[in-house]
Image (cartoon, rainbow, N blue to C red; front, side):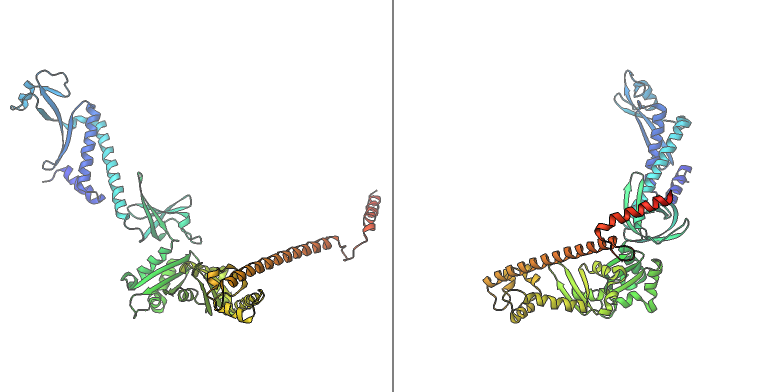
Length: 465
């Protein structure tokens, strides 16, 4: 039949989730601390848990000697023989001590050690439980607020939702249920710190994974997520099965799946687009619902110029540039969205600038244009090797052309600077003109102005007198 101590160890082990070995080690250390407190450090003590007896045993070890010089560590052969008839000089004799003799203060010390070890064990268990759960969504209850952070009760422990991981428009009160993304788990001496987030792009991914079986099964893959928390998110998805539409799977029947995610994000709009290995096609998908007329790719600068119909420009750019900004983050390309009219005008201006270069007529301008040199600026930035791709171009002519284009661009910019200065001067003159005009718009003669003002001043002073 198990002893009271054994039953207590088993019960605490079940309730706290702490292994028996950890509890027994804590008990042994606690009793050892109590014995030290009672007898001091001059004793050679050993503490063990006797599984069969169900009790903690304390043994005092003494060396068997002929003449005792230290009562705490030595015992005479005569006394040793009374305890063990086979004792010999030089033996180490273990004498069982009465644990009841430790006293109330020693027992209190033992209790403190046990509680400390229990807390440490619980902290280790919590850390081990959460350290591999980064990237999961967890449910909790708002416990309290601490310097802008929301402290969330997760049951066995607490987690922190820092201010920067909170969606600006969301508000909570004590007792509210909250779902969040486990961003990080750190171990400190005071215990594990679990950091939550509701703004991280992966929070959206995890929500879709919970709602869409095709994602959790690996049929549909989330390729990329771009998000402005509380406003809008774009998510790019691809399917490994040609028979499964990735966008349709995420939207769900009558939009039930995406609406569940939107509801959890408290109304944040979500665009689900099809990922494509072709960057230009991916950009077109990412900028939906806007229609795309043309995409000009600059792989060297990882940028694209996107041309849209005039009536689609505001739709492509989005409110305060949000749509194009999210599409840029989603695809990883710098995007410059322009209207069809502006693009065509830019092409005309660029072609005209080619014709302005020395020795460039319509034929050469067309040849340069066809090879991708759409303006004098493109020619100025080119290398000789680049220009040699143009049919009929020689190295000498390429060098001269680059020099002419560079000079042309410099002269254009100088003229623009002068025009800007002249415009600024004209604007300044107009301001001075307005200040110098009378209220009726007339302007008095220079010589009369000071005298006239003085007369008015005298009249006012006479009136006051």
